[in-house]
Length: 259
Image (cartoon, rainbow, N blue to C red; front, side, top):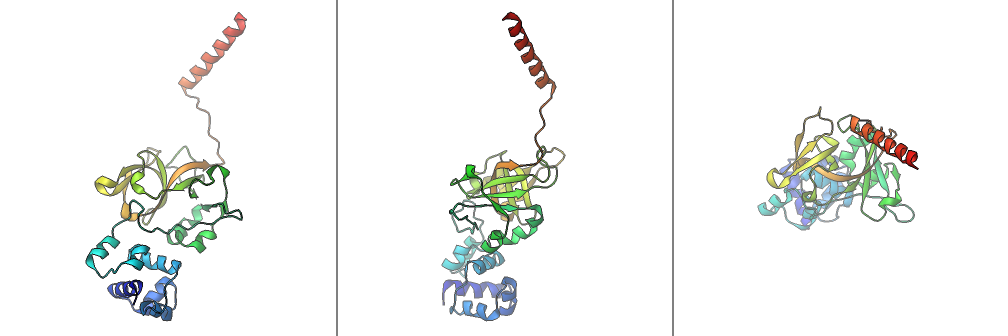
């Protein structure tokens, strides 16, 4: 019997599920699950990902370690902060083998929480390509809602670059976070991972209070790199700005008078 067979059977029993019940949860036939547990077949990536989320263990540990061992089981439940373990990042490419930028509309946000690592689900999302980001990483676009990050208007698209090592998050930088309990959020971040294993999320609109999110609640993080909006930024007409404009005009008039 293979390690993955042992681990599936072990976790199924720990959850108190029959083969039929577990098979229904991951969307496969009971006979196929039986074949996995007996080592007569091995699950594909999509099924492994579903089992990983259900069991709370990383895919690489499910297939490479005997999680009946208490020490290995403890490791399996530790959050992968530095991206050293396997994370399934689903992408698509165009006919020229360039990575597409998948768009997650606001109406698809709830579904993305379940399908973010499923290549078939991601392939169904709208996609586009921006040459300025070609070959420099993996990008995804998210539609934001609400007024917590003004002056960016509700409905704007944030283009984010995938962050593998969460310990590298920069304080006061903006990120899109995909989280279990809060859904998809766009916020400024204060990195408290080393101290409390949390991230403080801060809105640009002072009407919203900052709040903490445990890294155990985080599925993906994308560093904001660009935004797309149909609302053009308004000029800054503050007193200081107006004074500078008037001063500049006076200097130009004086120069013309002296010429």
